[in-house]
Amino acid sequence: MADTDLITHAAAMLAADVAGYSRLMSQDARATVVALDEARALFRSHIVSCGGRVIDMTGDAVLAMFDNGRAA
Image 1 (cartoon, helix red, strand yellow):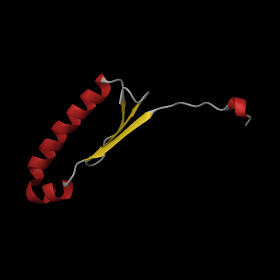
Image 2 (cartoon, rainbow, N blue to C red; image 1 turned 45 degrees about the horizontal axis):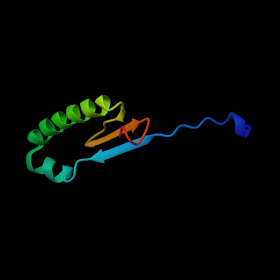
Image 3 (cartoon, rainbow, N blue to C red; image 1 turned 180 degrees about the vertical axis):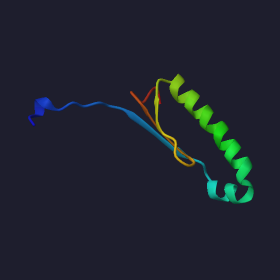
């Protein structure tokens, strides 16, 4: 592949997880799952409203991509 064939794209990635998730689950799993579902909806809404894309939401983590750092 020649250098002229390379395609580059600058992006900003967001990775986050819930601090103390295992402890919270052991204390009250039902309330933790409810709170996590609410947080996921909030994260998704804010990410999309800022022009980002949710890449993955597995367990207590969220991974999102933005086309630039300012949007992130």
